[in-house]
Amino acid sequence: MEARLEKLELLFMEQEQTLEALSQQIYLQQQEITQALREIERLNDKLKALEPALVGNAADEPPPPHY
Image (tube, rainbow, N blue to C red; front, side, top):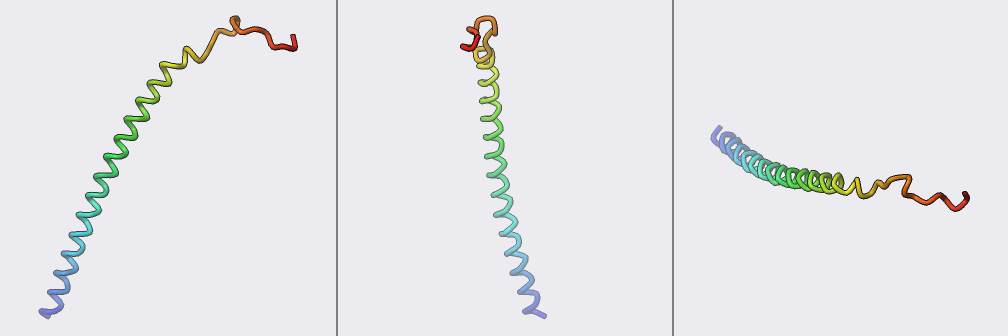
């Protein structure tokens, strides 16, 4: 009975360590996701600021060469 109890305690400690490691990994991944979302938002804002410059007035464009 004593050996069984020790084995269960060891298994519990290993699981506790594994859960702690997984929790830390999830925390780090969430930080990376948050950073990536901020970067996407920043790039999206930058793209929106460039859009008016990218889209010109069709009247200002010369006609195609086949006209």
